[in-house]
Image (cartoon, rainbow over all chains, first blue to last red):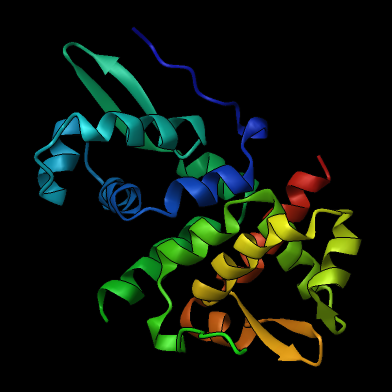
Length: 107
Length: 107
């Protein structure tokens, strides 16, 4: 099964902000931004989340808003941050958000 | 009656993003950013929203997240965008969001 993703020009800022306005989803995006190849399980492991099923909804929100891609690969789903698309459409937005998340995390 | 507002260091990025991840609330913030003194009614007039009661919830979300201040003034509530606080805490975030909203609005 493959997932539908919006094209770059179908991305809307309200959807991106709403998708990232949640601690788990923002945390997942921070993991993806840190680099490396990730699937759902590896992101959850970094976040310390054990309830895999609760994330199904969150992956869909991130995917539908254009923040990540989720592609089947064998029995797993590879996850990638759509940095190029987001940076092209909303220059500076993703970096400002990730930087802001670090500000909060540092107290 | 006066409202409670979070201090600058109580603002959290998830709350800001969630607050702005809604077309009406983002629209209201764009009106406030354009300048001038505004109350609830004048923002709604610019947005073309006639159902004043539906905005009560939205004003609270914007206030509680630290995006706006809402201060009683006579029989009205003056609304202000907390640009200084947001810019200090999350440099570049508000401008990237407002710029992104213009990108979307321009197609």
